[in-house]
Amino acid sequence: MNKLLKNNTFLIFLAMILGMVAGVIVPNVMVSVKFIGDIFLRLIQMSVVILVMGSVIEAVGSLKRKEIGALGGKAFIGFACTTIVAGTVGIIGANIVKPGSGIQFTGDLATDITGSDQTLTEIITNFFPNNIVASISEGNTIQVIVFALLAGLAVSYLSEVNGNSKVLEGVKAINQVLLTIIKMVMKIAPLGIFSLLGWAIGNYGLAVILPLAKFLGTFAVCAFLILAVFITLTAAYVKVSPIRLTKKLTHMGVVAFTTTSSAVTLPTKMDDSENKIGISKRVSRLVNPLGMSLNSDGLALYLALACLTVAQFFGVEMSLQQQFVVVIMSTLATLGTVVVPGGGLVALAIVLPTIGLPIEGVALLSGIDWFSGMFRTTLNVIDDVLVALIVAKQEGEFDREIFDKD
Image (tube, rainbow, N blue to C red; front, top):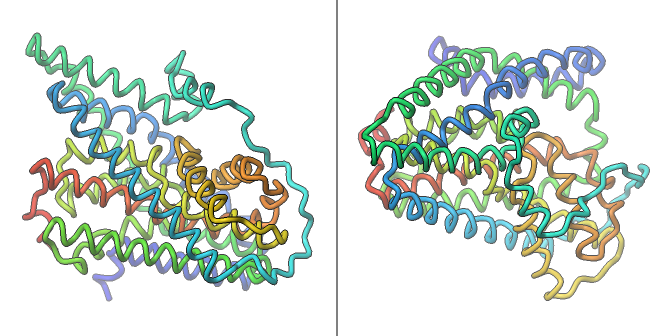
């Protein structure tokens, strides 16, 4: 029992269960103590953007220039493949289960969430910062990553030409400080998660889940199947036990599930990747931050499933060609989407009008967005690490001794 009480994964899982129970029993109390969870999230988020920047600079700066394109290319191919598969599974799941049929929804379908009216060229242009300090302040991770890639290239160049690694050593030292701060904050994770889950149930109530239980159930099953297949295939490629790999992924999965934020989970994901799974720092600190912004399998699955659910609810028939467009749009909409709770609804508001569906569908799913976010984030986080593991194996930077430790 003492061993369990020292296991942070177990404590977080226990806090999740207790928080949900408390949300049912004393909803008003749990709503009033949400600030504890907000403080926990802020303590993690306060250094995430700087950690992303530092990690990418360290990873790219540690590479020789000719290696950077190959490593990044492998990661992007992995991200694209997993995202397209997730969107396709969402379409298949929606066609089999039909979660939008028979929904008895009595709420107001008005919504103040709107999609972006930016053109494709404007979206691409906005990937590039004109003031990196402003990008850091606004938490714009895509712009921060673009700057970090360029800064990393500059550090790599200086190291090769001048043999000067002082800047790189300084960045590594800052990253170490930030990771230590986050490890300290994670000690209070069970308390923060208890209050967040208690608030979610206390504020929304179980009643909001019931009309869309079929949607959530379909989403959960699809996410589980994707994870099961991806973990099995990755384990076979790396030649490790899928059961042991699943165990190594559990802690970050629980953190992702309970916080519903890829950004908050990033430090845990990087730490577990390097110290539990055996992915080299060079690969982990490039692929994991990139994956946080560019690889959103959970969101692709959600958008594909949500679009067909909305179509079924409004009685709109969608041809096979239209459903293929949904997969493509779901994949594209994940690029650079906000990595904090609530980003899914914004992405849905972008996709629905594009494929000719009423934007009021956002309101239909808004009440369960927190709960949808649990599955979205878990799939996002774990698939990022699986891609990083495959890249590490290809690069000869997978440490089997670390993986084999309990």
